[in-house]
Image 1 (cartoon, rainbow, N blue to C red):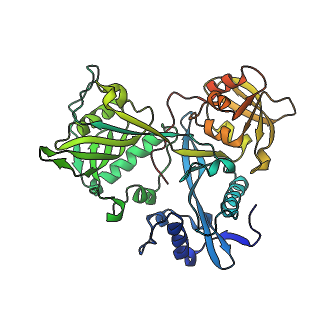
Image 2 (cartoon, rainbow, N blue to C red):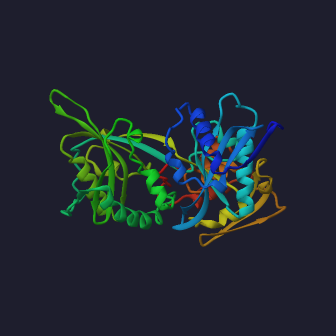
Image 3 (tube, rainbow, N blue to C red):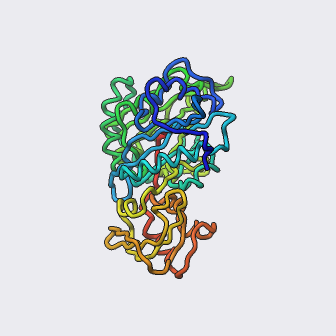
Length: 404
C-alpha cells in the first residue's frame, strides 16, 4: 500500500535533471554532468515520477517496442526501464505505485505484455513479473580452439570497418534477424546509439568498439588489454554477434577465435549458443547462466493468443493476480493447430498458477512442469501441466540480447 502522502505524474522537460539525479542516487552512482544516454530513448509521456510533496523520490519509464514471440510474430510490448527509488524513501510503496500506474496504463492502452530487466531478483515477482522468461549465458573460452571436423568454415572475406561504415549494414541485418528470434526487440535509430554507446564512461577500461562485417552477419566487440612477459593475451569482449545464416555464424566465430594477440573471448549470449557443440573440446567453454527478461502478462485474454504454440491443448487455467485484478479467475485456454483462444469460464480449474508463473512460461523460457515442482503451479487434473509445458515450448530457448 502506497503512502497517502505520495503523488505520481508523468514528467516534463523541466523534471529531467531531478529524474537523472534520483536514478543515480538510487543506484549508488554519481549524477552525470551530461545527459544520460538513456534520455535518447526515454518517452516523456510514458515516464513517471513519484513525489513526496515537491521532492521527486521515484522514477520509472516505459519504452514502446516490439518483441518477437513464437511463430516469428512481432507484437507490441511495454519495456519497463529506469525504475528507481531514492534512498531514504524505500518501503513506502513507491515502487508499487509506479508499477500499478504503468500496468493499469498498459491495460487501458491494449498493451498485453510488459518486460523488464531486474536489478535485484527479489523485487518484481510480487508485481506479477515472471523470472527466466529468457536466460543469458556468459561464455568464456580460450582462443584458437579447434572446431570439430564437421564444421565447415568458408573462405568468405571478413572485414573490420569503422562504425559509420558498419552501422547501415548492421541495422538492416538486425532488423531481418530479430524477426526470427524469440525474445529479440525492435530498435529505433536512438536505440542503436544507446546499445552501442561508446563514450569513455561506457567502456569500463576497455577499448572502443570494433566492428566486423560478414556478407551475412556482423560482430561487435571491445578489447581488454592484458598479457605477461610471454606476450599479449588480450580478451575479446563480444557485444553482439548477429547472423542470418549458420555459415556466417561459423565464419565469424572462427574469425574471433583466430584473432592474433588475443587469449580469450567472453560473450553474453543465448543459453543454447551452438558454439558449445562446434568446438572439439566443449569443456574449455565455461558457461554461467543468469536470468534476463522478466515478463508480465498484462491481459491474459489478449496476450496468450498472440503467439504460436507447439501442440494442441484444452485446459482451464485459474489465474491468481491481485495486482491486475482483471486477470483473476478461470480461463479456458484452447489451442488448435498452434492458435490459441482464451475465454472466461465457470468450469473447474485443471491448473492454478499466478501471473508471474504464466509470464515465465510465455516465451518458452521456463517450463511449467518445473514450476509445478517448485510449488509455483498446482495441477488439479493429472496430465494438464505436462500438456501445457509442451505447448509453450519452442524449437530454441528464447533470448534477449540487449538491456534496455
